Length: 427
Image (cartoon, rainbow, N blue to C red; front, side, top):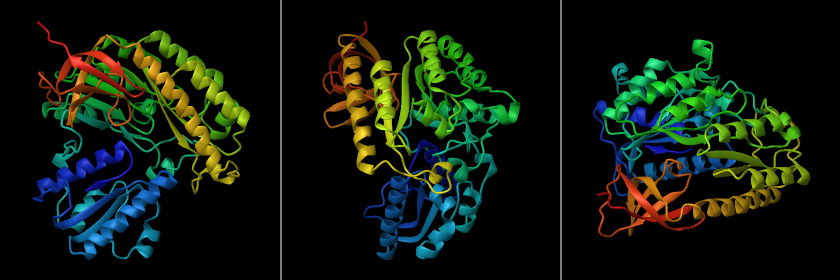
């Protein structure tokens, strides 16, 4: 199984792998030098670069099949959902093409049986001490630049009891950190319960014995449920971390993006979050080069980043997506300008992150170890999500650190996106 794209794809792959495992298949984590009966590519179709990576991966797997290293090749996921017929026509070497919610059909096509009693169980591909927990499928927002609703449909919340059962199963099987994910986390519950019930669900998740960290990803800023902040404050195992993609700060751009929130409302929300949870690490995502973005509007965004000083931040360059409302707009910002603007924001963010890290020198922080790498143990704080945020590096020496365990660490040195430290002996 080769999984591309976001963490939501990771969850889909893990659930399917569990079904394969219970059907008697052996799961290979590395196909190099080994023959497999089936190669499965779980694709991403979100933006141009992701589609390109998916196509290139499929082509590589076709070559493996031609070499005799695989009997069958199956393609699934977002790219397959959106371009099924095109893929069938252009890539006849692929034995099966399935969309985003066709796990049962995939199993049946390969002689397996989909087992309902396994729903909620997974074969983790992350380190065993953390897992992503998908709260819903699809999105009912109408952001002008986003193709997700076209691919995965409207927002469908998972029933609360189903989520709690899965979370409990994961924790009983060794998971200590759950990362809550959805295309729009704060929309959770509206379709099922006619109100936003994320705060009450997080509060219930926090009561699961053995669950050390709960991390919140992709909280849409419009109509943000402010009572969630009280839940974060009241539960020590809910990380003081919030991923809130704002995309832009210019009123004209936000309106064209159809984000449902103004610049002033965005700033007010961010200030409220900082006021209510002063120690929170706010992560956001921005887009540069949206159609018509002027130098003045970009400067407005850059100035906002400089002034607000997000603890964590990422930038995408705008991608013209087929079928989206923004597709009708003239894609009039050259790629080199999009990239230059993104690079400029990241240079500013790099300095902000460095200065923030400097404030941690000498402090003792709680670190969860993820892995060993060369001469270091690599871990994270509650303010950092795996793969996208800062890491803590602990030089191997007298103290042995085990992945999945927490350690008190004194910060001895910092870089822009890395922290160095040593384990503190607790008497």
